[in-house]
Structures are given as structure tokens and as C-alpha cells.
Amino acid sequence: MNFLKLFDSLAERSTRGVAQRSGRRGFLVGVSKVLVASAFVVPVLPFDRTVQAAGKPAPKKEPTDTDCDYWRYCSVDGFLCSCCGGTMTTCPPGTTPSAVSWVGTCHNPADGRDYLVSYNDCCGRTTCGRCGCNTNIRERAGYRLGVHNDINWCMANQSSLYHCTVSVIVGLEEGQS
Image 1 (cartoon, rainbow, N blue to C red):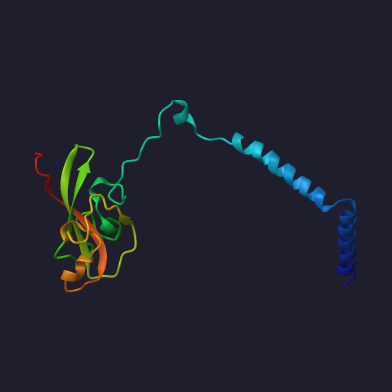
Image 2: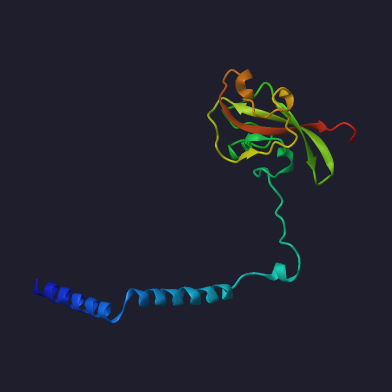
């Protein structure tokens, strides 16, 4: 016990001595100096700036079938089945495609053509919750149901539970071959 009392009194004396020799302003000045010095050190850290030095923009990553930016998802509103156990064109096991769907016309930048894409909801299980997309390009008002994507298209199925959405190319837009 004597050791603890000795340690306690030593800690108290040293703390009181520091408090008598310095003030709050001195502490704030010291912290400010550290912050200012760190502002000069951070820009010196190594960064890869070779792309900027060459004057070229950073290479753009091609979107995949799990990215909302993929061209055939131009009018999708829902969760991508490619993230939920299915593929871009097939429903995951345990779900069935909706009996009705909405359509969109999507531009493929690789070949410069416009494609008619059918978006089918996959029904029968609770919502997947992964890779949610809501692009709405060329969506029409709710009174044009065939091109409106805010409807639960599973209502036409035996189970109206929505799980995810697939996008199936059904053809080229008219006037293209």
C-alpha cells in the first residue's frame, strides 16, 4: 500500500508542477504548431500521379453486369438478379419471372445500336436488397404501364413477393439492322 501512496503523491506533484509552469494557452499553441506542421507534411506523402503527369484522364473501368451503369440497365428500377444468385437474364433459384414486364430502349455504346430490353421481376422470395438500381432513362408516366418501372410486376404471379429484376434483350429498335 505504501508503494501506491508514494506513486500517487509523485504523480500529483509532477502534475501540479506542470500545471504551475504552463497554461491552457501554451497547450493550445503547442497543438496548433503540430497541426500546422502536419499540413505541410501531408502533401509530401507519396501518391501515384503518373496518369496526371502524362495529361491523360484515369482509365475508365468498363461496367459489369453488377453495375447500375451497365448499358442494358438503362431503365431498371430494382435489385439486380446478377447480385442475388441469378444472372443478368435468369432468375435466382426459388423465384419465378413475372408474367408481365416493362420495356426500355437502351443504347449499347460498344456497337452504337439501340436495343429493346424487357425487364422482368423475379417473384416468390423477399427482396434481395443488393445492387439496387433506379436509372429511369426514358421512363414514362404511370398511365403508360408498359414503360413504367415503379409497379410491382409480381402482382400477376401466384406470389406477389418481389426479389430482384433481370434484363433480357428482345430485339433491336425499329430502323436498325
